Length: 199
Length: 56
Image 1 (cartoon, rainbow over the protein chains, first blue to last red):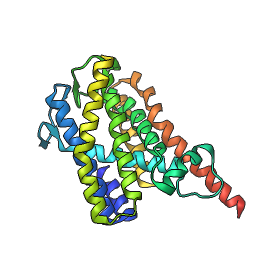
Image 2: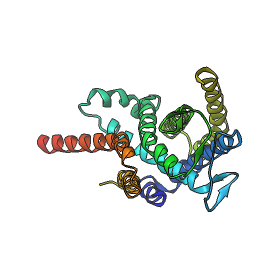
Image 3: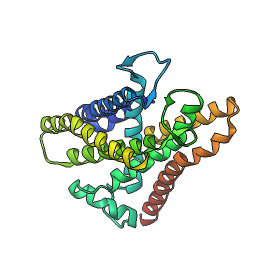
Image 4: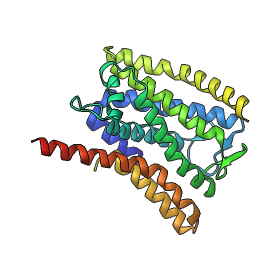
C-alpha cells in the first residue's frame, strides 16, 4: 500500500515534491505516536521493526493515510476545475488560487476520521494496538478520534499552504521540516486542552 | 481507477475479509464510513466526465 502511493507520488509530483511530502508525513505522526505511547495512551506489540516504541509500519501507514485522504479530497473538491463549480467545489476554489482556504484540509480530516471509525475498532479486535483510555466507541477512546482529526487537519493545512507558495524548493523543504516541531507543539497542546475539558 | 483510491478501497476490503474470516460480522457495517468518501469521489468523477462529454 505504502509503495503504491510512493510510486504514484513520484510519477505525478516528481522526486522533490515526494520527499517534501513523505519525510514530514512520516516524522510528524511517528514523533506524536512516540509521545502517545510514552504517555501511556496505547501500546504496540508484536511488530518487526521499531523506532522508539512505535513500529515503523505505523509511520508508513500514516503516510498512506495522509496521501490517500488528500488525494480523495482533491478529487471531491475538484480544485483544478475553473469552469462551473458546485457549492462544495466553489468553497474549495480559493485554495487553488491563494493556498489559504482550510476547506480541503477540513475534508481531509473528515475522510481520515471516517476511515478510522472503521480501522480502529478492527485494530482493537485483532490487537494491532491496545488502548488504555476510557472507550467511547467500540473500545476506542475519544482522544484517538480527536488526534486523527487534528493531526490530518494540521498536516494537510500546512502542506497545502507551503506547496502553493511561490518559494524556492529548498525554502519549501525547510519550511515543511521546521513546521514539524511547531505542529507537534500545537497538536500536543490542543490534545491536552481537549483531554482536560472532555475526560 | 487511480492507484491511491484503489489502495484505499483495497485496505477496507482487506479489513472486511479479515473480519469475515474471524466471524466478527458486527463490525463490518462500520466500513460504510470509509466507503462513503470513496463512493462520493467516484460519483463526482463520473458525473464530471459525463458533463465534459456532453459539452463536447
